[in-house]
Length: 315
Ligand code: UDP
Ligand code: MG
Image (cartoon, rainbow, N blue to C red; front, side, top):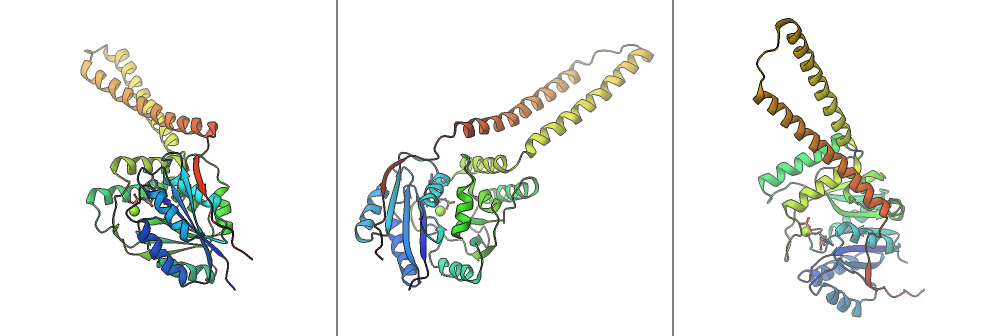
C-alpha cells in the first residue's frame, strides 16, 4: 500500500544535456520511497531536443508527462503550469539541471511526514559566485525583507516540496506577474528550511545573467510592495519643504536687503536636480501602471502547444 501520489514538477528550457541524467537520478530516489509518482516536464519553448528527450522517456515510463509551451514563457509560468496540472497529494518543484539534488527529496519527505506543510532548501553559502553578485543579492534580500509584504529567507531556493493544500493556495494567487519566491512565502504554512551545499551544473548553461537577475529583483519588489510609491511621496514632501524654505529666504532678503546678483549656476543645478527627481518618480509610478496594465489584460500565463499526459494508473 503506497502512501500517496507524489508529483514532480520540472521546468525545462534547453536542457537536452542534462535531462537523461536527471531522470536516472530521480528514478533512483523514487525507487527508495513508498509513493506513487508522476513527473511533469514543462518544456518552456526549448529550441533544442528537450521535448524529444522527454518523449523518449515517456515511451518507457508512462508516469512521465510533457507540457510543451508555444514559446519561452519563463520559469515562473512553467512552475504554474506544472502545479496546475499536478495531481499529487505531495508536489515538488525542482530544476532539471541537478543543482537541486534529487536525494534531498528523501530528507524533505521525512519532514513532511513529521507534520510540516512544506519543505524548502537554502544554500549554505554563495561560494563560487562573484563578489558583485553577492553584494547585489544581499542588497536584494535586505530590501525585500525591510520594505515588502513578504519575508524571504536568504538564499532559499525554488526547490520545494509541498502538501496539496499549499499548492491549492498558490494556484489561488492568479496574478500574471508571478514572483514565486514571494508567492511561496506569502501563502505561509508551516515551513521547514533545510541547508544544502551549492552544486554546480553538470552540463548546460545558466539562463541568468546580470540583466535578467536585476529585472527579477525589481519584479520581486514591485510585486510585493508599494513602498517605492510611498518613497516617491516622501521625496516630494521633502523637496517641496526645502523649496518653501528657500522661497522664504529669497522673499526676506528681497524685502530687507534688496535683490542680489542672480545666481545662474546654482539655479541651473536646482532645476536639473528637481527635474531628474521628477522623471525618476514618474518612472516609479509608471512601473506600477505597467503592472496594472498587464494584470487587467488577464492574458493566459502560458500557451500549451502539446500535452502528453501520464497514463492513468489502474486500480
Ligand atoms: N528555466 C525555464 N525557463 C526559462 C529559464 C529557465 O524553465 O526561461 C528552467 C531551467 O531549465 C532550469 C531551471 O529553470 O530547470 C533553473 O534555470 P537555471 O539553471 O538557468 O537557473 P540557475 O540555477 O542558474 O538559477
Ligand atoms: Mg540551475
